[in-house]
Length: 87
Image (cartoon, rainbow, N blue to C red; front, side):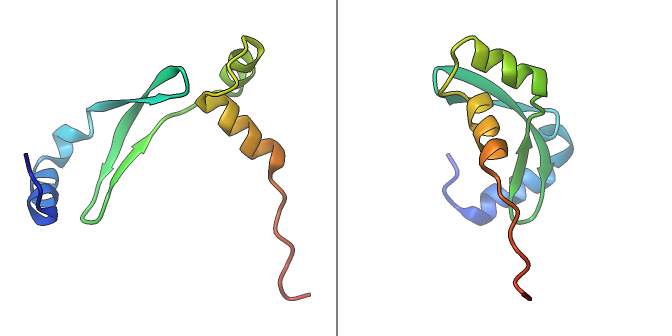
């Protein structure tokens, strides 16, 4: 197992094209979500997942109030644009 940042980064960079085809499963709440490794850079690994609006509403209507869909819905609902600081 690698415990060096440089070793991990070098291996990732050397295999970035193959790694970008891989997925990682992450448990959130009671469900497990699959994220795609979408980027390998010199400082970080980027993962992503598309969540459709209908999937958000469907999951919540089925009682999923601790999953990723609920979290995304709450972020959207509670978002307030920042006021211009030049006022």
